[in-house]
Image (cartoon, rainbow over all chains, first blue to last red; front, side, top):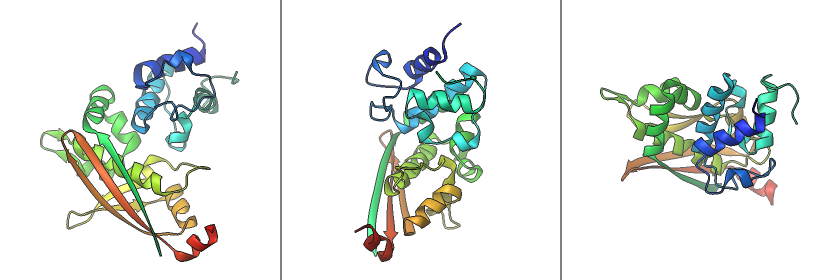
Length: 86
Length: 134
């Protein structure tokens, strides 16, 4: 079974349009500083919904939710997709 | 009175691709019912219109100080007046943030061409807020 961070990295790879290799990003690196556009973050959000079979609540539909792998992981934890953040 | 300008551009092709991949889920996440209605045409949803509205939301975010909190996309709405002119309507967190930062009025201009949608927003900031930041 894939780790949550691995799934997040896969989604960033396929939908983030990042100009840098996702594998080289630390979990706390700011994704916007590394080239994630606001619009691409929306695609990341929707692809995460597909990957985890969830729906982000309106309160999380904002740029800050997707500013780092850790932030995404915390957002997933807040809607009970994962039990405890690593 | 102080004047602050925000500007943003959005490639229309990226919006088209998102509509193709995610359909109505994409539009409902980002845009209000009014914004979606305004972009409906006989040929379907206008990606150019949605791209311009997304650029407008981003332009507003560039005016606001969002270091502590970034408001949700749908709390920044591009409203079309009866004369067809677009204007920014803030609600919820975006309205509260703008009020707390002395934003008194927002003017909007949107355009698209050559595959790019663009938006420029001019904000009038109250003098009290300007002096408070000095």
